[in-house]
Length: 395
Image (cartoon, rainbow, N blue to C red; front, side, top):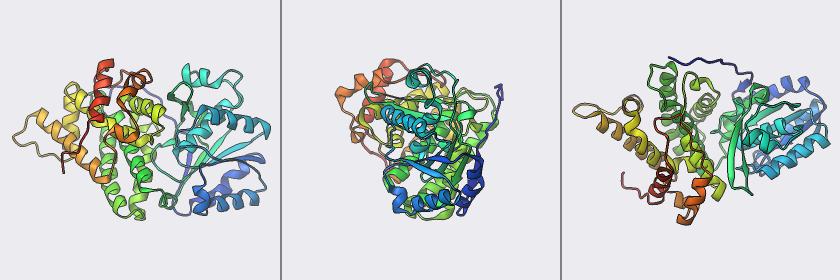
């Protein structure tokens, strides 16, 4: 394990089916004015909104609401949230929802008191926060992003067709997060499986980099196997508590920075997915699914040893009588079968991408160099075209 690193994670997690009661432990640490942030209203349908409001009132809090956070939060929406924070002198932002709501809350947290244009300072120039930060707490209702235990905040600038994230320093991490697997039961199947692949993609982005013997690679393999097993169960029985709790916990550990330590990391699949979402507003996890196999098959020869290891240790490919290339290819074939089995979108055309969008998507794609191969612009186009032409051919 060759990397040099510092590891710190300040977020306190409360996990389990009685975890909401611990909101009573956290609220007294903050001032009176709370900005309750949520999405389209699903938290009202499942009764969580009323539960949270009751606890906030019992703790003597003044509640101001910021509803309507979209799955791909926009810069315009974030700036509106910043205005609310300043207008109401907010002491705590409480995000109740999925990863997009948590991402949005952290963006507002860091940006509300920024004296410059926060998009330019934090999302374009990726500079550190040098202003007052409003603390954030999360009550999670959907898994996938891992946003409940990291500093990531992905925002879409709709006018410029750019979707990008800033990984803020630990001062912006949620101070606490409440994780009750039962809150994820009502998520529609499409969104549920998209979240499952977002988790998988987070793990693979970190796994497919470097060649040294790294402890975190062993951790990632275990997390992947748990995710694969539990996601198959959850697709057939969405209210299986063991499966949903395993997935929720895996999601958190996939992106709380632990398994990135000592790794260069890749993140090219995410860059492609973000660019697609900027043009189509498609569901994040599905954009990742649609480009992953074309990307991994392209870079496989450059990281063959790791792709072989992936096939053997995650997909249990039998190596007898096979070359390294054949083993690695079979691992990706089994990944494809799994992706089709749980119902992921494999063709970007199903997400709204058309041939005439490809040059624009290319321009919106940040090309990174942390993986086994730095893509050329022609290779980005070839990946998009391969996905656009994808037809299921395997059982």
